Amino acid sequence: MAATKTYLTGIQTSGMPHIGNYIGAIKPALAAADANTTLYFLADYHSLNSVKDPARLRQDIRSVAATWLACGLDPERTVIYRQSSIPEVFELATILASVTAKGLMNRAHAYKAARDRNEAAGVAELDAGVNMGLFNYPILMAADILVMEADVVPVGRDQVQHIEYTADIAKSFNHLYGESYAFPIPEGAYPEGEASILPGVDGRKMSKSYDNHIPIFLPESRLKKTVRRIPTDSTPVEDPKDPDTSVPFQLLAQFAAPERTADVRKRLEAGGMGWGELKNELFDVLNTLFTPMRDRYEELIAPGSDLDDILAAGADRARARSRATLAKVRTAVGID
Image (tube, rainbow, N blue to C red):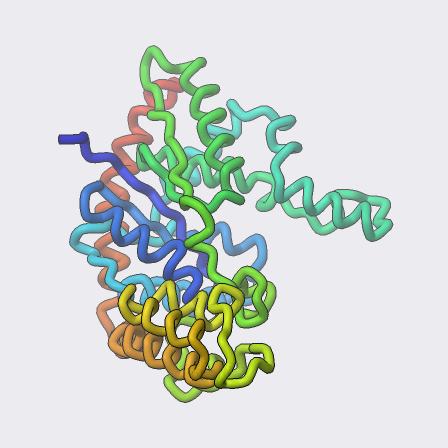
């Protein structure tokens, strides 16, 4: 039997997740809890780089936590906590900063992208608009991962550099202090193929930045309107259609049972099924799946729910782990 590994996932606190997040991140993360130790944290301090409205940030944190719990995260099996509840993360980030080369940070994708945007816009000061939170982001992320001694970090392909940076920073620390304590070197777990990338209502990758997403817990009436507005071509009802070029069918295939998907494909290819009927099928599948989750979400997000107690209990469990790690790190560097 394979040894149990520790999986750590950081959850962005940037509003309610969409159905693409459900397929690409939430479902795989929940499945990982079946055979591994799993810790999932709400990255609220990371959000400070972009969210400057305190009321919005508070609401986003609760909304995202409630969403994951409503989607099936079991807080007895998975430790869920707020990053801000773990002060050891920030102490470790300071220690890691002392073993991290500035040149490594200069090459970070997010920082370089900000400078490139300024250069393209003709801004003389290439660091204009860049705060130190953005610049030091990879170090804080490394602290999030290393303080929990994580073995595996599931991320999208666009996050590969963050895992590589975390490994580099851990190796720098281990090179200096490894005789006393050495961090486990984490590995990334990346989605296979393109199946986890859902198209948005406009055909591009589903993303909040494109405003083409379908939030998970849209009320039933708004969900129906959103699905009905997905653009399709003018092929007559009676003519054969190519399901693989259809956004509604691509979404249906991710959420419907295989038998239902196969039946819809057959009807589209044979002719006689219109795009409107396909959208009705998609709405029915999404509404059936998410209605009970939506009800649970509304319970959790309401004032006086057990949401805050769940997060507090998760923080207690996470801090027990982070304290143990930091005690070893402090001894290794000579601060004990």
